[in-house]
Structure formats: C-alpha cells, structure tokens
Image 1 (cartoon, rainbow, N blue to C red):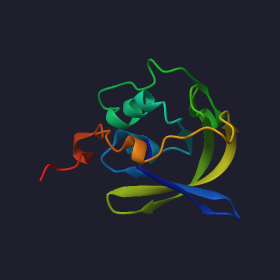
Image 2: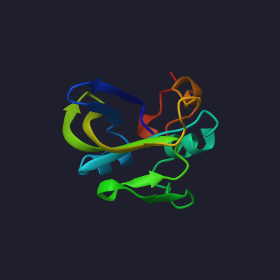
Image 3: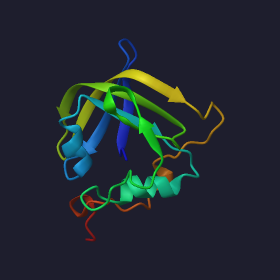
Image 4: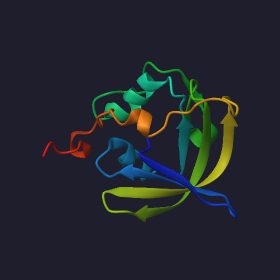
Length: 138
C-alpha cells in the first residue's frame, strides 16, 4: 500500500509513489522495471488492511486474492477499482522513503467517476505491517 503518491508532471505524464525503506515491498520495487499502482474503493478496507497491515516478510499477500498478470510481468488485483502500470524512470532518495518516478504505460478504470475511493483518512487506523515502520508509542 502506498502511503504517499501523486501525479508530478503533466507533460510528460509522470507519477511518483513513495515506499518505506523498512518494507519488503521496497526491497522488491528497488529492482523492478515497472510498478503497478492500484486504487481501491472506500469499502475495500479489508484489502487495504492486507496490503498495508501485513508484511510480505511473513504473508503471501497474493495467495488468497484474485489477480491476473499485467503489463511487463506486473500483478493486477482483480478487485481494484482502477490501476496503472508505470515504468520506473528513476528513484528519489527521500530519507526513510524512496520515491519511484513512474512513466504510465497502461491503465484501466473499472470504477468510473462516481466511485468513492479509499483515502488516507479511511486508512489511518491501519498499523503498518512491518515492525520497523510502525510509529513509536512515545
């Protein structure tokens, strides 16, 4: 699950997603040519909890979730409202997170314009899956 992401250029089209260095997903992404970015509906909190609250170090997140192969060998979640696959153009050091600058290559929007998407506020109660990325209790 992406904590931070944004379109960052109109011409040429570019999008950046930030991954925590503490997460297994970062270790996979740092060697990837392409990344898939999925948008979830507000009512898909269980899927968000799986991808945001579990660590890939202990859980195969794709084992019980329907998916299909996407462009460039990416995995596309069947239940995602929308998704895009982007070629990694560069990586940006942001401290405890690394930004992946993506050049979108393929996209699908199954939700239309009227679907309420899951937002940061909807996911605030998800405790990060990787212990090193959990907020301290002090």
